[in-house]
Image (cartoon, rainbow, N blue to C red; front, side):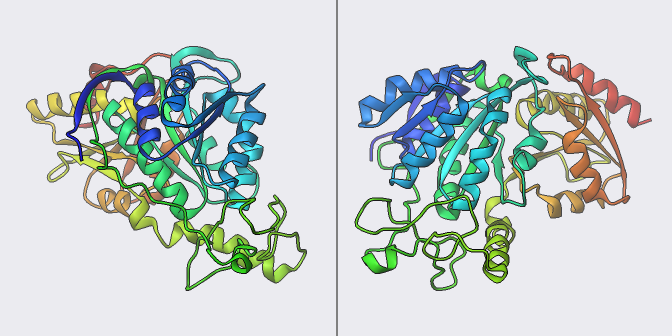
Length: 380
C-alpha cells in the first residue's frame, strides 16, 4: 500500500478519481455544463488505466452505452446535468428493472429546461427519486465537499454493485466547480465491492435467480459462456419476459426490498450542534457549507441551532429525521429549489414540530447571513 496523497482539485475532478479508484473502466457521456469536466477527466484518465471513454451522440445513447458496458462486466458511469438527466430517465428505469449496476452523476444547474446553465441549483432532488415511471428502487448520494465527492463516488459504485442497480450521485454546481485540498487513497487502500457472479454455466444462465436469501441476484458478464436475456419487461429467472402476475409481484417487490431491508447500511447523514438544539436546519449538498457557518455564528449569539445533513438523500433518512423532530421546536429546511426536500421533512415530522423553509430558484447561492437572518427570526 502506498501513502495517501494530497491534491488540489475541483469536485468534478474528484469524481473521476473516485470512480477510477472504485474500478470504473468505461464512461459514456455527452458534454453539458456544469458536468463537462467529468467527461474531460475520464477522456484523459481512462486510457491511462486500461479503460474506455466514448462521447455519444446524445444523453439517451450515453445511458444505453453504459448499460451495455456494465452488462458485459465493466464498471460504468455517465455524467450530466438537469436537461440530460431528464433524457436519461427511460434508460435509468430500464437499468433498475434489468438490475444493471451503473453510476449516474447529475451536477445540478438551475432550470427548468435549459435554465441557467452555469448557475447552481438543487432542483433535481425529486427527479432523482421519481424521474422514471413505475415503482422502482433508488439510491441517491449528495456530497457537500470535494473530499466527499471523491469518497461518495467510491461508495456509489460499491452500492450499485452490491444491490445491482443504478445509483445517482446528486452533485450540484457548487461542489462540482469548487476547488479544495483533498486526500486521495493510497494504492490498494480502496477495496471495491466486486460483482457477484456464477462460475457454473447452467447457473449463470439464470441471472435473476435468487440464491441463499439474496435480494440482489448474481450477474455473470453477458457473453462469457452463458446465454440469457436482458429486457425491460417483467421477466423470469432466465431474463425472458413473462405475464405471470405472481412472478411480476415477486420481482417488483424484491426490487424495493433491496433498499427497504438495507436502509441502515445505505443511509448516511451528518449532524452538527444537535445535542441541545431548539432549531434544526436541514440541508444537503453544497448549501450545507453556508448552513454550517450560519449555525456557528448563531451559536455565538446564543441561538441554539443545529444542522442535519443527509448524505444519502434517497432513501431519505426518515427515522433519524423523525427522532430530531421529536427533540426540537422548529425545523428550517434550506435548499436551492422551491421546496422539494421540505416535503420529505414534513412527512417525517408528521405534525410533531413546525417545518419552515428557505428556498431560492434564481441561480444564486445562499450566504451564511441569509440563513442567520432566518434563525434570528424563528428564535424570537
